[in-house]
Amino acid sequence: MQRFEDSALFRHPSMTEPDFAVSALLDTPSVVVVEPSLDDLLPLVGALTAAGFQVTSAGTFIQARELLNSQPPSILVTTLRLGLYNGLHLVLRGKVAKPEMAALVTSPVADPVLQADAEAMGATFMLKPVTERDLIAAALRTLYSSDRSLAPLRPPFERRASERRVSQGSFDPGRRVAERRRGALSIVKGAIEAV
Image (cartoon, rainbow, N blue to C red; front, side):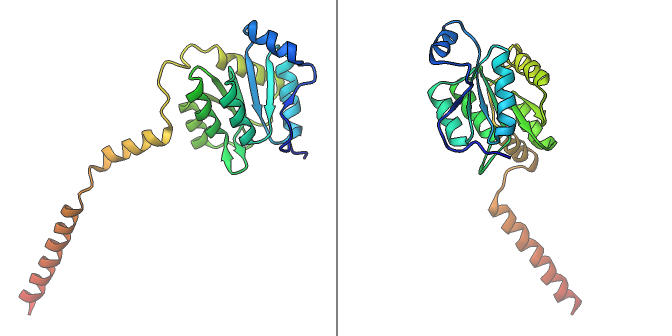
């Protein structure tokens, strides 16, 4: 498997700089594809370019982060595993820069927890291998869905933390110490009465 190394960003050969500028003026949806494997990257870029999207790709989290900071795309297509990072980190960064950004997250394994996290962020979760037809359909469905930007983005870990606090009640260390002391005193009183 070939790797997309830390070289210059890859643009599909059919996309020239004037095309890039013209497509921005014509409101052609821009797509950033983040995939470290060239074997998976080239079919994705080819399919999206053939469908009329303006495609830029990155092979690492760092390159993708720079792209998201400089010019947020209309659609982010990222794989879940990006070395030390996660594709969901990019979705969060992209949504902060451009809340209406659509996102597709691909993964080689079915993980219901990560799928739920991706969907909570407004991203579409897809299992690899992704066919060209499914990719285009998911990109269009995600891009033109009407409820994508209705709810404010709340990272799933914050939602879960607040639910845990509500269900467990507040923590009071003084109350816990007092309960332990009462328990210890009842044991000592029981031992004294037994003698």
